[in-house]
View 1: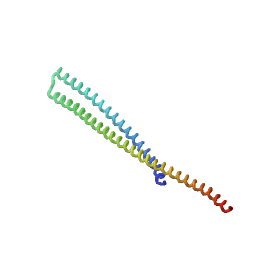
View 2: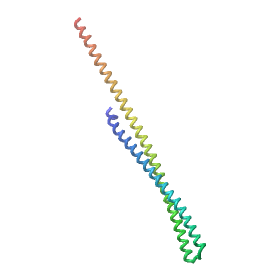
View 3: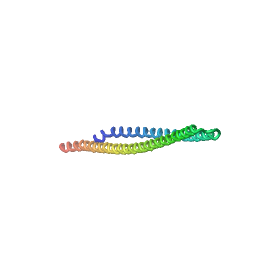
View 4: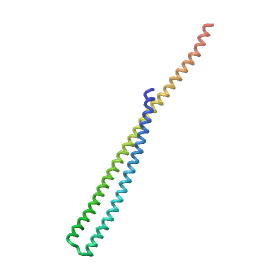
Length: 161
């Protein structure tokens, strides 16, 4: 009986810790999703702005004379804008990877909690069985003591007869 009695608080602590870890991992997953969604919106906004900026630049070229030095600068600006968008796309991929990792971690924490809960239930059942067994033995012992008390007086009366 002592083994399950000693394990019961430990199993409860493990289950509580696993429960806290599930909450933490859920918050991490929510935060990763939020960051990914914010970054995705930033990428969409930048893409629209870049296209508008390029259109404005092309329009300014059509309306004026373009010198060779201006053409090189124009090409560099276009390349820079597109490189920035590519970097934002790459960053979005990293944000999605963070979401995927957080989702895996959260699922692992949920499985850990289920395992801790099952272990706690098992120990609680063993503990309950031990309590019932002990109560049964106490009842049997009390019944035997009662039988001894009832039988002795009868034996004592036999001596008087």
